[in-house]
Length: 276
Image (cartoon, rainbow, N blue to C red; front, side, top):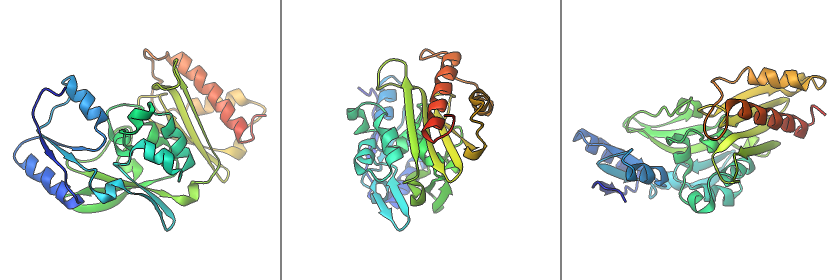
């Protein structure tokens, strides 16, 4: 139960949503955009989040689209993970989303919410980082298209009042060879010790990590440069490039996470035909 009162708005257009946000904040009140609401509701119930108004974006067509157009796949920020899995238009993204939470929660968790929420894992962003995806952002100055690392780089980077409208993925990457592995402490459905997603693009392997550090990140390697005679050295080279300390928490120690990651990377290279 949420113990405080708030106003609810459900705009039909991007422009209406931005104007409502501007009006509310102009009254020195706090407004937040709302789609799936899983995090907003759970945090509000324990008084970790408060606001005066929510602006529900689910009625905005651009935020709910999931379609291929020309050479792009476009997914709205309010599209839930279940729809992405069922759509099947991007197999790697579907595989990653299918391991996030359980089915009932995936019916509510949205792609935009997973990317911009407070939870550190943000697994759904990995296939987007690997494919140099772009995003459409709307604000008081209008709409603009940006690389995804302009709205997330270690943490969400949207300015106050900006709305993540949709994500744009270049179709040339969608059918590339890919892999996905997720290791949890006990249950199949849980936060990850480590999640690794990868795509092979020509002679390059792009690898995305979640759970290893406090934010998801991407590392690239040249497949032809892998030394099959010294796999330990190759794994060390990758781990030396990890951009932040390895997480040590109740799910697993830093040493155990590193052990799991080493084994997953060996499996990954073998999958693509190296380190045999």
